[in-house]
Length: 618
Image (cartoon, rainbow, N blue to C red; front, side):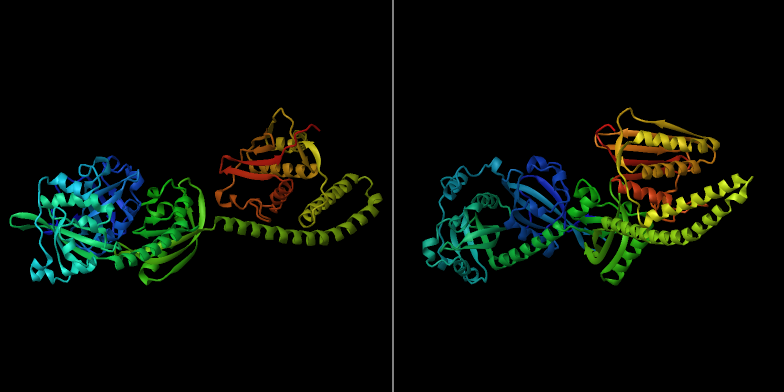
């Protein structure tokens, strides 16, 4: 359970004159988790535009380092002034209270609360009508004169302080110590006393400085702000400015302490550029890069969002990884995450299957790298989509099987054809002795011829015969095949219905091969309907394609073997060889067509053939 910091606010933090305008909650890495509902009114952004993104996207680049320093180096409530970018690129100055939200069990903070009060809004500027320090002072405090304190008149304790101090009245310098003179390289202090501090401050900050002076004069103690100042020789430096009101002779003065952060700022810029390069590498990676914490996605790059078919980054954020993972891989991934977390080493996981938001199955391989999230063990994963590679491997395996089947078929065919020729020759010699039993002789020759036909089909696998392509009407070929098989179908109480379109259905094909495909499919449907039923043969045409559907009411094909349909020697029939569909697939492929199959157990199967259409009449 996370709770707000129960300690009272430190003395240097006080309420601002007006109520809080904006509230954000971010992670220690700067990712926005929550933003108050008035965000669109104040900044112009909708909540969906910001949640899940980095706060650095809306913080002025020169203020990011200061904010990050509070995130990583502070364990208490603090205040600072920040510039925030609106959607129209205007800048709003916010007086911001940064408050860590602690976990009561671990006493560590994992989230940060930002309470932001508008300091200066260019759309509603009540302070400056002209961007001039003198205009500012006269508008705030008319008819006011300022005492001038020379450097030599200051108490020696402040003058010898090891950090730059400036005391001003309504922005007009009344005192600065030696360190301040050294930092700003002031050669003649007497010439500077009595001037405004604006001569040393970059013009970009004049407006917010005027507002802070107004708050100091009202007795408020302000947070730290980063500003760009100018030395007397106009060289620019970055400083952290801490301001508090002090009372001298019952009047309020501004007590300003400066800290030169130019070197630190330069180093931070180097680190920041390096970090941005690293983030660009992650975001632009073609592989998915994600972080898994307590089985949830807490970070995922753009490639991951696309891979899972999500609409946005926030759609993935916080989702359980097992919602997407195939159930067969759940135990393996749990073990994988456990090994990465316990052994603190990189682990490879070769193959797993996921589902996208659209239900599409994808195959991946991943690498797990130990990391932390809010100080607790997490796993960074690099996920590579290998679905195309898996398909290519399957095609390669299928091709190898076809090659082996072809070689085997050729060998078998030749070995059988030689003795078969001898048998047919001797039977011809005995033909005259079969007088009165000619029907038996005819049956023997019919079966031998059938064996030769089967051998010819086997040889097609190894050495396809010459294909003679001609333009044919697919409806005529289908009617011939139906006529051939209709008697066999009727004997098994099966009715074959045809539903052909009344349009030219011309294809360029080898008629005998296409007939062979249709015969194989219809015979398979007949074999699948032991109790009878109906086979529907339907054609549909488009401008460039013809579709032929073979729909039966048979037992269907189990999902577990559906993907293996067309493999050589793979069959569910007791006396089948598994070559029929394989040859059919091969023939359709050689005709630049496609075969797809859809089947449900105990409901039936549909084979759909797509062939190129010729737009002319035979």
